[in-house]
Length: 511
Image (cartoon, rainbow, N blue to C red; front, side, top):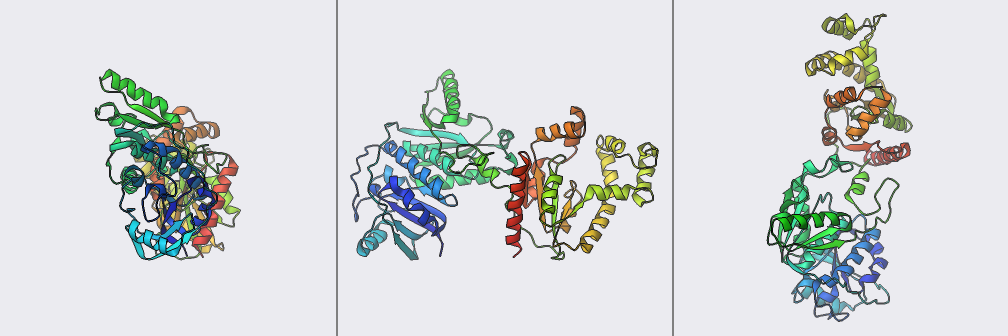
């Protein structure tokens, strides 16, 4: 049976990868890791604690997180630092209660019981114990970088805190003996990032950083602050003396020092950290562990719980929406291969526009005969050139057409013989049609890609394409209302894999 939280007491960190796969099968949420070398009796040090400064553990901690990245992808792994920095640590303190205590060395029951009672502050009443043999002991290799400071600083997006973030944060906490300041980027700095619309809100990101740091090393003072530029307080705070950066952002650290020098502030020690390789990268993902890869992997998953609605359970209705040129039709085609009936609201709209239908007469009465072809059909291109330039005219057209489309769609759903119906509509949310759907799925592409597609596919000028994009809600609005998000930016096969994942997860929800 899986437990929520485990504590792994490690004597042989270089061999931790041998036991992590077994640990993952027993822990569901959080795995704390405590180096036994940081603790005193009752076990004593398994090996002599020869490190005379905290940063020398840097390489060991990086090695642990690297192995965790390979073997514990679904766990929140946290290497505890207090025992390394403060070697008279009386007890292991964690924010979450420990359900399972794991040892990588075989001890007798008496020693284990004594250790748990004397050294772990918050085990649950019904905790369990597991022991493994991690094999031949390997000596630690201390880092040769011994720099310490009073006040360390670092910055980043910190979206859905992952192992690379934890490595950078731990490095700062390991080197500081007083305070750590963390700058968390505000939304105005996120628009260039892959799938930025899926980035967590600021409060969530700030709190997750603070929660992690206070959990792994509660003794320091943490200032976790939003920043609206690449530098934040690092260019004005005279108390800071060290900055942790990734190798990729080393130039940013150097730029900060250039600014500090101009402001007559002490230059910061710059500590560059090599980020951890992504152990299982796909073709469209980054080589290093990153938030971008994490967001890509959210595509097709359930991002927002499905609300119960007062509509029939059968057929199950998916509302498929998204901005113009975002790939809705391609996704609908893949879903049709899974046996879904596709109701394309654009095509339904074509039908309600036809001569003899009430909408046709109402449109001509309002917009005039200039919107008609020589055969008396509604010229959608001419009509579009009018409504996309005027929000008032767009509202009027919608008030005429949307009720008629909704009526036809409701009829088609009721008459469907398929288990799942997909209602494909760019205006699904604006028209309020999501109330007829059990779930909302949305497609998105970056604004620049949508403009490129409109110019290429529809023959629009740059100005016309931009006007078409600007007439609709931004991607973030679609994402906020969606249960499932899909992105069609990459090759067609990548989109297919997203749809297949979404479909498989849907079938699990419907069981």
